[in-house]
Image 1 (tube, rainbow, N blue to C red):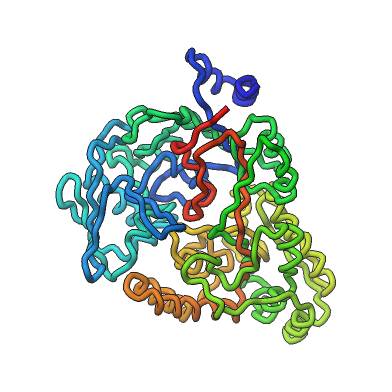
Image 2: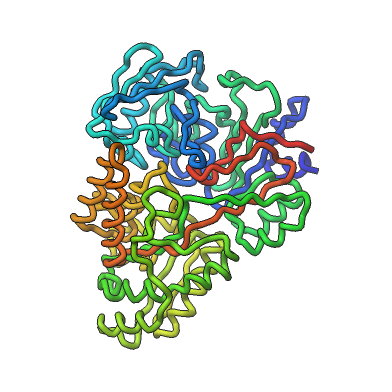
Length: 512
C-alpha cells in the first residue's frame, strides 16, 4: 500500500526511485508549510532546518537534557582557561557529498563565509576574532570575549560545514548541497516536496537499519497529515493541532511523543503603525489575550504561559520577569489612557496558513477584543507571503500583529532577544520594528558575559526582558510542550529541543 501511494503521490520523480530493482527503504515526513526557504547553508534561517540537519553537519551536537555535547565532525575539543581560545580536532576521512575531504581549511572557510555573508543566524559567530588552521585536521578559534563557543558551534543554524569548492550561492539556490551529512539532494519541487537520498560514503557507514531515502512532503491541511499518518503513507508529521493529537491517542499504529521545547508562540506588534505605535495601546492588547483559555482550549494543557520572551527550561528564563495576565479591566484602563475608551479601531493579524493552533488562538483573541470594541481581521497566509508583507517598505502597509512561533538558532537567550527585538538595519524577524538603545546595550553585555559569568548574564537578560514587558512591542503567549505524532513502527527517534522539528533520519529505522 505504501509503495503504491508513493508512486501516485510523486509520479515520475518517484517512479525512478522504485524501478531500481530492490525496494528502497523510504521515510516520509509530512510538513505543514514550504520546507526549503533558504538553500545556502550560510543563510539558512527557517523551515529548512528539518532537511539541512540531515544534509549538513556541525562540529559538535548539543544535548540539552544532559547539558553535554556529542562529537560529530570534531572528535574532541578543548578551551583555554580564559575561555578565549577553542581548539577542535577533526575527524579524519570525512567526505563531502562532492567527494572532497573535510579539512580544517574547509571549516575555516565555511564559518568565515557565513560571517562575511551576514545572513540568517550568522550573528552567533560575533565573538570570533580569528580562525586559525593549526594543521590539516585541527582548527582553532580566537575570541574577542569568552563566549560559549561550544553552544555556537553546535547551532541548529549557521554552524554547518560545507565544501569550499562548491559554495556558490546561485548553485545552492538551484537545489544543491555540499555537506557531509548522511543524506544529499535527489529531487526538489518547490512548494511540494524534497527528496533526499543516502550518501553512500557517509563517514558513519550504512551497516544496520537506516532509511535509504527521505521524502519531505508539504501538506498544509492538518486533517490530511493525520490521515496519511494513520494510513501508513507518512512516518512522521509536525505541529498537528492538539485536537488531532487527542484523536490519534487510541490508535495503536500511531505513537505520540511528548517532550519539553524551547519554542514559544509570540504576537509581535507593529510599533510603527497607529494605533500600535502607542505603548499604552500595546499594553492594553497584552491584557486582552485569554492566556489560560488558549492553553486549555487550544493546546489542551500541552503548553504553559510564557513569562517574558525566553522560554521555560532555557537558561535565561526567570520568574523575575513580568508576566501579563488576562484582564479586560486593565485593558480598558490603558485604552482610555491612550484615547480609545471604546476601542473603535481595526487590526490585522497574520499567521501561517494551515497552522490550526495559530488560527484558533487568533479566534479566541478576536472574541475578547470584540468586547472592547476592537475588530480583529485574521488572515492565514503562506509563510513566504506572511514574511513578505511583514517586510513591506512602508510600515503602514504591514500587518498590525504578526503571530508566529520562534525556536532558537542556538540554545541561548540571545536568539530570542536580539533577532525579534534588537535594532536592525534590515527587518529579518524583527516584525515589531522595535528599537531601544538601552535594550540593545543590555543584551550585548549579557552575551559577552555568558561564557564566564552566566549568573550575571541572566541578570542582564532579565532586565532587558522587563524593558520589553514595559514597552510591549510584543508578547510571548505560551511555551510549547511538543506532542509529536509518528508511526509506532518508526524507531530510533529522539526529540531534541535544541534542533526543533528535526528528525535525524540516519538514527531512525522502520520496524514492520
